[in-house]
Length: 221
Length: 71
Length: 252
Image (cartoon, rainbow over all chains, first blue to last red; front, side, top):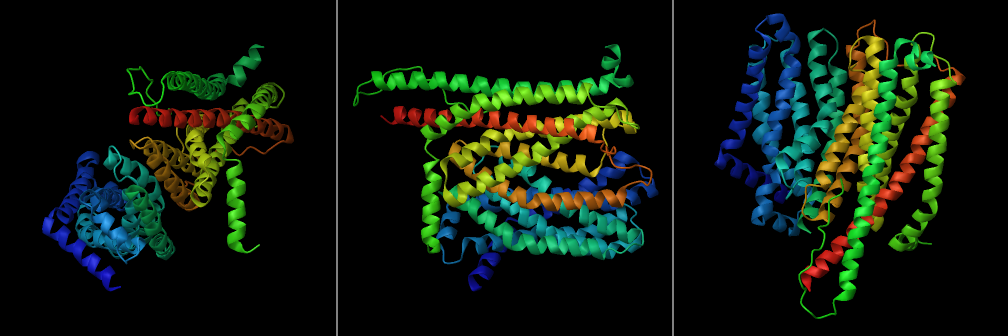
């Protein structure tokens, strides 16, 4: 447990020192969302109708950005070999890196989302569910993305390949996440959607690190 | 016969559907057979070269076919 | 037997079939039969589907597209399930043919998925007036298509072919776990957003006269799959032998 926390702290320190990941993801998030009114027109009713979906898709794409480097840096400088040999199980190490990734990219997205919802004229009733759905959904994105990142270690065109692999797997999270907000906006219960998101997260928490660790062992062998 | 071809007015849709399916199945088959023939030929070449060359000698020049990724 | 003994026994049993020469012999024996069966079943299915079965009361002759659309959807799913099984076998028993089979059949699965999507589109246009309908089945099949493409891209993305196969195996296993969840989420999404007037694509009352061509075409596609799986796995085996010989040449 101590080693787990140490690994999370180390990754956090590295990301924050590099400084770019969190800000890049949030900037991408904001810019992408801002493109929609420019493309579709500023009509308030239209924007409000698509707000939930647009924010969710943008959050999806923004999470993808930093996933490619999740294991790649350590893979290239040999740190991943060390992790594989350390007493901390590789699955736990993977989970630790996912946790750091989420803290650095997912949380800023969650915090930036209400601002974007304002930009898209989302009615006030959706804000709480927006935050809740992103809070439950973005960890799943980090988890699945980590499995994909581990699979594409050392592959040619790894970044694009990662997107192709991972986006179909994101679909359930997207459907339930955006669906939750739309439900709240229509006065219907958002709880089933949020419960499903939570269920997905509960399943991904043990399974994704297992897949990621298996893929890392493949890459290192 | 012309009734059959006309498919109740939906000829374009029905025949296109069957044509696309036929195309995909035939193309897959052709590609699979082609790949098989090519690799059998390449393997024959490589094994003949291996027989011909006595052990211990450095590899001479040889135009060995490149192993292909399967498409 | 104790459990470890049983596993060892199974491993040995599995590996008896792993011998490439043995596979080649089995394949050579089966191929003529599966090829012949494919031709016969296709001929019968086409006759039954296009000539000997009635048009639908509501959908007219477009219902004949169903005889291709539905069996290809079944094959798309069946082949992915096979790939998942092969990947699992490859992991647990390290059967050398398993990963090769998986890679061999992926394009066939992708082909059936594409046929399903295109025929679905051709079925939808005369019926619903649009070239694409976001109904639950078509949307799930579209995502399955992306899963196939992802697998094919991944196994071809590495210089080391074995690494590609192993990574692909993990991807398929992750995909197969996700697949029911994706299907469930798409069904859910479909019921949420369905306008009241649109009913689901292609559910004519299944006249027994329509069931027969459907089943015959399904069987024909299955026989076709067996034929192609044997041909393509054989080609993968040859390719591996070629790679081994290449490396030996390079090393000596």
